[in-house]
Image 1 (tube, one colour):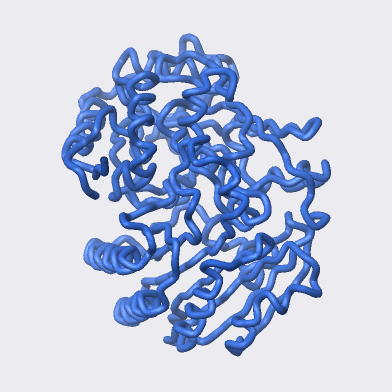
Image 2 (cartoon, rainbow, N blue to C red; image 1 turned 180 degrees about the vertical axis):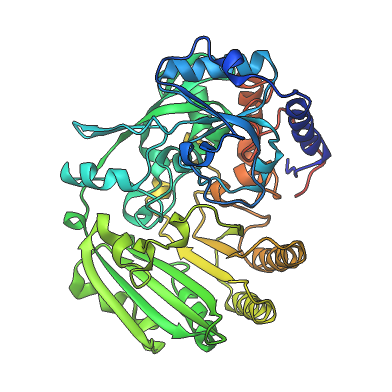
Amino acid sequence: MMVCKSSLLVVAAVLRASAAQNTSAFDLNALYGPGLSPGAEIIYSSDSAYAAAITPRWNLYDVPTYYGAIKPATEADVQHIVKVSVQHNISFLATGRGHGSTSTLGTLKNGIDIDLGNFRSVSVDNGMLTAGGAVNFSQLFEPVNNAGKMLPLGNSRCVGLVGATMGGTVGVLQGVLGLGVDYLESVRLVTATGDLIEASKTKNADLFWGIRGAGHNFGIITSATFRLHDLVNDGKLTSMDLMYPGSANKTIYEALQGYDNNIPNALTLNVIAAYNATSGEGYMVVNVVWFGPEADFAKEIQPFLAAGPIANNTKTVQWTNWWTVANFGGYSSPTAPDCVDGQFFNAYALDIKKTDPAAMTKVYGDIVAFARANPGFSGFFGINRYPETVTLQVPNCETAYGYRDTKALVTIQSSYHPNATLNDAANKLFRNARSEIQATSGFDHLAVYVNFGHGDEGPAVWYSPEKLENLMRLKRKWDPQERFSFYQPVPLHYPGPAGY
């Protein structure tokens, strides 16, 4: 049964938000202070030190609002905050590294931010990694690599490990290692009743299934333990950036199409199409990642070399240093968009099983035309082709992750200064683009990687129709009051008629 985000789901979000809004101003110290450890902090949103004391949000689009933040120092603190909040019907949201950007977060109004900034410990021992709930990917590079190991990570060094893992973790290591979520061994989690439990394949196994793909819906993960993988290709990868004029876009999409049904596990293709406001022209960058012998590299990417790049940046580095060289070194820049907090960033995405050059050429042309007509809009159209062979080695029923047969992820996005007129026009542009690509995607419905979802798609899209039934059962068991329902929420029941 296929379902869409319906009025019932919207009503549930409104009721949760209204409950928080109807809570009059109160004394956070009096309410939460008794029972907190000496190391915990309470910060009001009106305090002058508030912005500096909490973990900043990366994105300011559709943001949640808070009475204040509480920074727990211990797991017992997290339990206490949840219990008090539930007792007084106060909405709350736990934040790790602050990169959650779905518009559903904006349904939280006047709640409590449980800032996990003190949960940043990292331990590597005997092939296993244990990390706190607010650890980001870059913290793992040195300890994991020094142990002679690897772990699938996302494409931004600044994103939180746990937040990404709960959705699946996709990225450039996926072809050789698979999904990050498949390396998760166990979590320590505070539930909606304030209980601290462990979830794994042997403890609370049903919950552990749901956490691996929809974990934001079931609790606050204070720490997670992962199995690590031995180094592939001695931990070396070759990263090549190829730049093209925007006029080459159809040729590039045709080259990409050639990898739809035949791509080596060692090869990842990241195609970026954007607009340069200074030159007034579009441009394209293809970042190619290769985990194999350098002598074999060129023959695997001949279609892109034959397309006549106007610039080439090729470097072989340790896997931990891909971020320092990719996109002509732009990913490691201090001003790299994925690491600069406080942006107004609007994004849409979808999964695809096949590449349609005509549809992608049309979308890219629309984005460039829109950017030319709207100064300050920096449109971006990205396609990440990750080999799926290793991902498919894990049975689909093993986790709640919805789309193991995805071949590429498409993102359509821009950052710009808040402007209601521009925002409305950009949303129309992006939704049309998403629909046009979906029509030729190879899926018979819209499919979206949950962590990249805009927020308007609905639970059957985020989690797939076949996984939603079991997720709703788990939601009724572990969070019947929908305390954890501000991030791509799983409903308690089917929210409406079939469709998307």
